[in-house]
Length: 231
Image 1 (tube, rainbow, N blue to C red):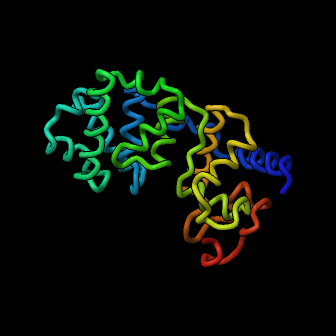
Image 2 (cartoon, rainbow, N blue to C red):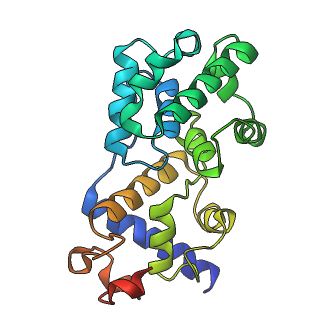
């Protein structure tokens, strides 16, 4: 597919989804960037509603501050994040992050996030429990960097829409589609990812996708196929 065709197709997909779902206002955080970071950790391998419940429990306990979370008794943190699943592991990881911010940045998360993006991403990837998706979620939603998050929904949808040959395409190769063919715009990447999440969560389901209700049905080579063909 020619570069201009791919650029146009990616823009068409976004425009159609925006018209269908509206602006998603993804990840509005009452407590700022630290709340977003906590959400990025807690949403791993669990539905967002369960992660959101855990974030609210941390808020109620006064633990959405790096120093407070780092100093909190582990059983208290585990109880707060229980709804997010793997609560012992996640409690340990978010406390490790909080302690890292305290030890290295005096508890000032913004000082950490203000680093050049390549350096910040490298630092994030060295922390326990942070892979490319979590690092890029923090980069996009907490640090405000123009970086596209590639999650399970993105993988499924790029494959079904014929933009990649397999849903197992490497993370970086999927991400570079957006970074190469769309403007480096924080708002665009933020909302584009949120639109894909909405589509994958509401219509383009892993099993029994609701193709007839999809705003992209006329642009999808997988529309109307059986579940087994929708990988």
